[in-house]
Image (cartoon, rainbow, N blue to C red; front, top):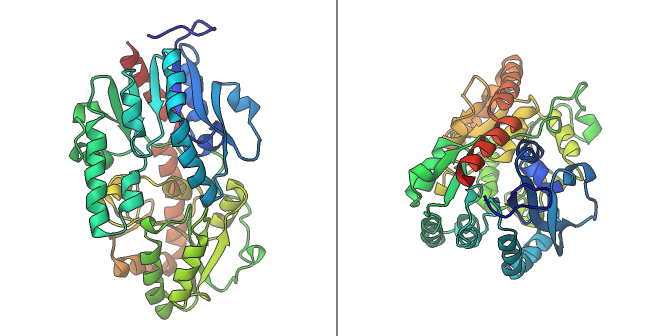
Length: 403
C-alpha cells in the first residue's frame, strides 16, 4: 500500500492547484473525506498557497499540506491564468515530490489539460475527477475549435485507460460522455457532487431587495459564478432582450465575475440592456452571494447544449437549490437527473429561448407554487449532494484500489 508515513499510515495525495481553503468550498466534501480517511490513511494535499495568506488551522489540521511557493487569487482572472502557467512550470517538481512519498493512491482533482495523464504515468493508483473539460472551455467557442477540443479530449481520456486508474463522475450522463470519449466504462464510478452545507441556505428573514439597492416592484432573476463565454452568457443576454421587451419589469442580476466582467458589460451595452441587467461584480464572500440569492424571485442555472455540458452538475445548481429559492435550469441530461421539472425546480429546453421565457413565466404566474417548489429543491439538494455520502463512496473506492 505504499511507504508508511511518520504516523505509520500510508498516504493518499489530493492534487489540486487551489489551496484547501478554496477547495473546501468548491468540493465541500473535503473535510468529510479527511475524516473518512483518517483511521487508515494520512491525507496529503498538494497545491498553491492562498493569495490573502489566510490559512484555516482546523482544516489543515486534518491533513498534511505540500504548498508550492506560489499564491493564487481566485477572484482575479488575470492572476488565475498567470498562476496556472506557473503551476505547469512547477508540476514536474511537484510530481517528483509526490512519487517520493510512495503514496497508496493519488486523487487528481486537477483536470487542466494533460495533467491527469501525467499523473497517471506515475504508475500509482489514481482517481481522476472529471469536473471541467478544459479543452472545450478554451477552444469551444467556434465549430473548428470544438472539433480540435474533442480530439484533444479523446487523446487525453485514452491515456487514462490503465489498470491502476479510475475516473469519477457526478452523473450517469457525465459517465456516458466520458465513455464516448474513450474511457472504459468499467473504470468509471458515479459519485455524488457535494454541496456547501450551511453556507448556501435559506435566510430568515431574507434580505429585502431595497437593502440590496434593487427596486421591490421588479422581478429579479439571478445567475452567479465565474463569468466566461462558454457558459452561454451571450446566449442568455440575447434571450433577455426578448424577455424584457415582453416583461419590462423583469431584471437579470449577474453575480460574480473573476475576469469576465468587462466582456459581459460590453455584451450588455451591445444589446442596449443596461437598464435591464444589474451586475454586482465579484462579492467578497459566499455568505454575500447567499444574501443576494435569498432576495431573488428565482435562481438561474444556464449552460449551452454542448458535449462538455451534457453531464455537468454546475456548483450553481446545488448551491442555488440549497437556498430554497425556485431554480430555473437548462434541461441538459446531467441537470435533469437532479431537477424534476415542476417538482423541485423548473427546466427549460437547452438552447431554446422561448422555453426559457416560458419557464420564468411559470415562476412569476404562481408565486405560491414556485415557493413550494423552491422548498422541494432544498430537500432535493440535501438528498443528492450529501458531503458525507461523497466522502464514504470515495473511501470505498480508495480501499478497493489501494489493495
